[in-house]
Image (cartoon, rainbow, N blue to C red; front, side, top):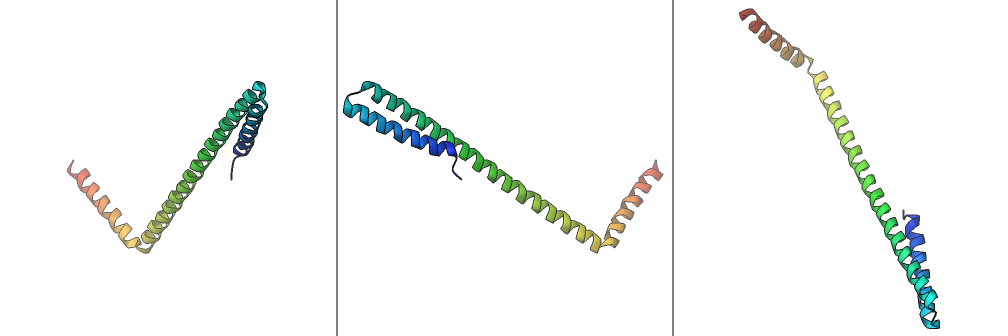
Amino acid sequence: MVDIDRVTGAAREIGGKVQGAVGDLTGSHRDSAEGRVREAAGQAENLYGQAKDAVRHAADEAYDVAEDVYDQGRRYLREGHDQSAAWPHASLLVAGLVGFGLGLLVSKL
């Protein structure tokens, strides 16, 4: 999606070029100068629109990456939960070994 500032800036820039050219052809220094000012303002507005488009694009990319990372984390969590649910005896064995080890440490104090 193109920012509206880019469109209006380009239109203003073209209008300024035309006004400057007409001023040059007719010898009107006023029209020529106004055309150049209008052209410069159009260029600035166009650049502003381009900057807004670039920021919008970067934000969209960052959102997509964050969404992918979130989905991947959720998938890993689900896989870990499924694996631990599939091996409840292993979880109990690890908890028992930790408890036994703590018991040995406490009893030697």
